[in-house]
Amino acid sequence: MLKRFFSILCLFLLLSCSNSEKPVISFYYWKTIFKLSKTEKEVLTENNVQKLYIRYFDIGLHPETKFPIPISPIRFEENPQKYTIVPIVFIQNKVMLQPKLDVNDLAQKTFNFIEQINTKNKISCDEIQIDCDWSLNSKDNYLEFIEVFKKLSKKKLSATIRLHQVKYFKKTKIPNVDSGVLMYYNMGSIAPDSLNSIYDQKAASKYLKSIKKYPLHLDLAFPIYSWGVHIRNNKVIGLRSKIDVKELMQDSNFEKTQSNFFTVKQSNYKNGVFYEENDLLKIEEIKKDDLKEMAEDLDENLPEKPNEIIFYDLDEFNLNNYEKNIFEQVISKF
Image 1 (cartoon, rainbow, N blue to C red):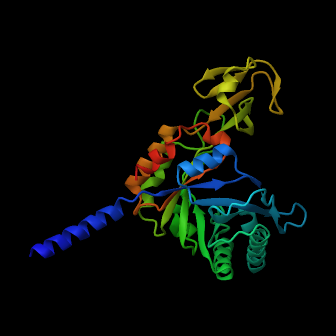
Image 2: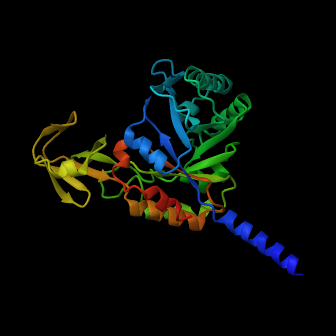
Image 3: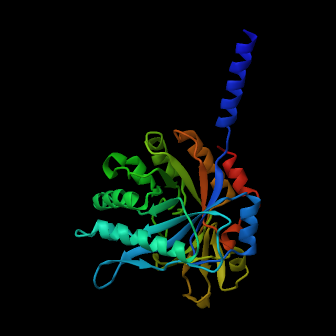
């Protein structure tokens, strides 16, 4: 009887340990040249990062022929062999909307180009990720592409999943992949109002309950980027990346008028961009409390724990906006 008791106790402890395992930390790398800065390397080491999801190229349409073409392929200036590499291909939805799209040809060329990049840079991979915000009108081409690509590659295949694709999965369908990555950002429209289009808890809450019903395993992608929304005459005229708010506060050409708005006091050029007097710059950023809030909300609504939290994206400018242990703080919520 005593022996049986200890056996049950050991099993309970084993299961408890298994359930308490935290997700691992990974990063997306979204630049066209792969070369890690000192800060980026330090963050990877400090967080015991083993895997990088690297954007290899986009696929868009040729402006004249409307045939699919690769856009901005990555160039490796250093070898990433220290890490497990997952190549990512971002496919613009307009490609999948083409009525006469040759899906087989596109899948073959996509896989061949990934292999060329891998061979040239002596990279081996066991997984490939496809990133596409497919819609109801493009779903047939997209789902067929996934089927063909999976057979061609003979590798683990993952796909990015947006919140609307989770909530309405019976209509948008589920790609035949091994796992999905829920992109928990870009939740609203880029507009001159005061809302944050990158993350808004109120907007996210409309989708949270539906995540429990989604039948595909989901890992999570969290944002660590920011941008400025350039507004003129109450219209958005562009997005300005890598806006240093501290520097902006010290610039006499700009005046902070609301919690996340700056007004242009006099016309000027900054970082190659012309700002006209009375233009507005709305700062949209993700603070550490936002990241913790995301993790807590998702922990309550996911059907199972994620294996990974992937942060978008690995860039020294982004990393400098957070304290060192922020990534550990986030995964501790699961």
